[in-house]
Image (cartoon, rainbow, N blue to C red):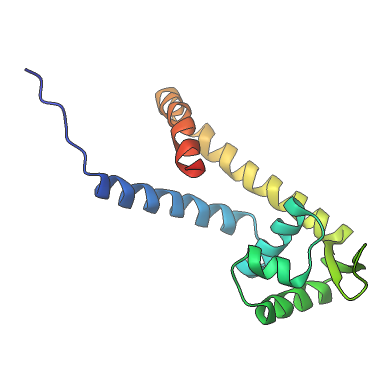
Length: 145
């Protein structure tokens, strides 16, 4: 009878969280030469993904108070990374969108993250790459659950 290892789900969750957090921190570090705050980068990313949004919509999406989002948007507007545009159906509201400079920053940010990750992957052994490829669908499924 072969003894199969018994894995503690708690230990797996702790180790997976630590590993993913470490990779994410490294990606953020490698791809943020402008040293914007994480919250600012999050807003730029959200606008890139979702398109124009009001302050309240952004605050809800980023799980923060509208007043805090207003401060972030003000700083991004000062850096000319976002701009205002009128709401198409409600003249009382203002939408925020990425400016050309904001779009360019997001493009550079993605490329820097990708370049770092490609470099890190290129240093792995073929068997390690195969193992990584095998777990990607599992990680995706966990993320979608």
